[in-house]
Length: 182
Image (cartoon, rainbow, N blue to C red):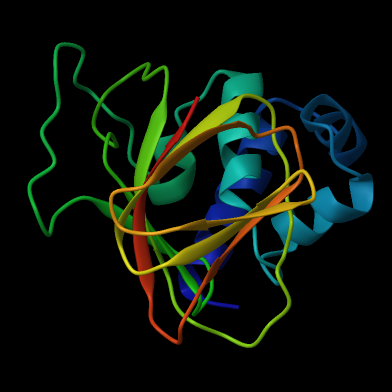
């Protein structure tokens, strides 16, 4: 697993330790199995971005702090210039670029996400809240609640993210999209 995932896993463990909570308690509060939570904290498995957002909200910490180890400070506004910001490459397939990493108490988590084409089966996840996706380039298949929706540049979708969903780049080309997790 890559270095960034291991660092996020260390921050998960550190937060749990600082709050003096068991893995069972954190897993229960975040709505995942104890086994899944322990996989995330081990640093040897992918950690879904939706889980990181849920955990941050559940325990009153900033998502940015879990992703990058830095606390956001801005309360009025925050500008992310092109080519800057906090990025996480969860796997070789998914790369997340946080667009509000410096804004404290953000009510939504906007990301620019790049999904590389691959032959792996579509992985579904779900998390509390809602999500908005706007396609910037490429074509994406979004499976949501058992439906396949093909999205092209300029298309958008808003959905209940508690429904199982997953994304896949199509036509052998990467897809880049704006995702706002609320």
